[in-house]
Image (tube, rainbow, N blue to C red; front, top):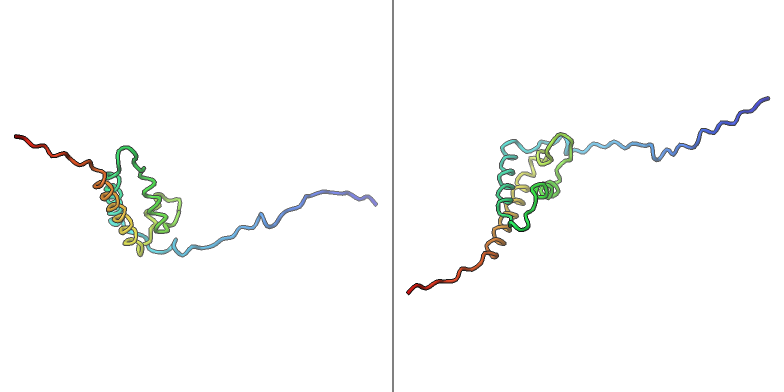
Length: 119
């Protein structure tokens, strides 16, 4: 009787298991186009208030907003569009607070003008 040894190797089943989970946020209602436009305007105001010597790039503002609101990361474009409709006011408050913080920093950093007395 002839015996043939064949070595097929070992398959590690733990590495080949794919876990599929459904995030309920994917199907939840997202912000509307007008709400998205309102958030864009607030971000533009924040960017306009940035100091010229060390501006924050716009993508960092959006990333912080998305992280704050737990926006669903999907491959279909801008992540801010995936902010839940229920979180719109949370996003708006976050951006307004950032804007007020920028305004107060700018106000405190303005040089004080010397008073000139003309005789």
